[in-house]
Amino acid sequence: MRYLLLDRITQLEPPRLATGVKCVSLSDDTFADHFPGHPVMPGALVIEALAQLGGVLLEASRRAEGHEDVHALLTMVDRARFRRIVRPGDKLELEAETILAREEGGQVKGTARVDGEVVATAELGFAFARVTNPKVLARRREVLDIWLTGAAEEP
Image 1: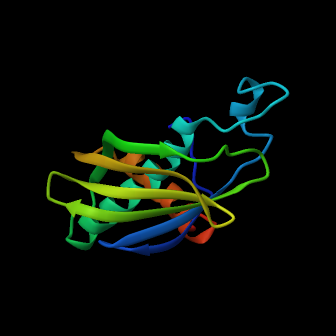
Image 2: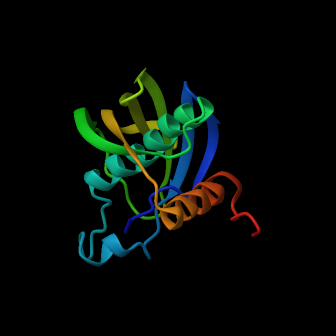
């Protein structure tokens, strides 16, 4: 994945809720071209940040049921609304609430806020894919550990 758009997962309560943050920085690659002299975080990346959090929530729900090898793939974005521009220096407060969780996938409602003000909302649908490659599983575990604790587990 080229863009990891979560800095920290602050709350993970499967199957119900996950919260996280993304500190938007002028050094983010996106701002080189979007837009010079007027940096704006693309709405698609705000949705991607919500999708990453929602995917973690649904995957954690499946892990709680004993399924360690699932990867949530974004399959649908519905009812997306953008209410405010996100700029460098903003701290995106992200929230994903489960609408539906099934064996084959699920759906979450995502909300992004800056300073408590809603900047974007969307309903996001996911399908689960099975991951069997040990290197991919290890890398996914490392990223999740960093998101949850700020550091990867010691080998």
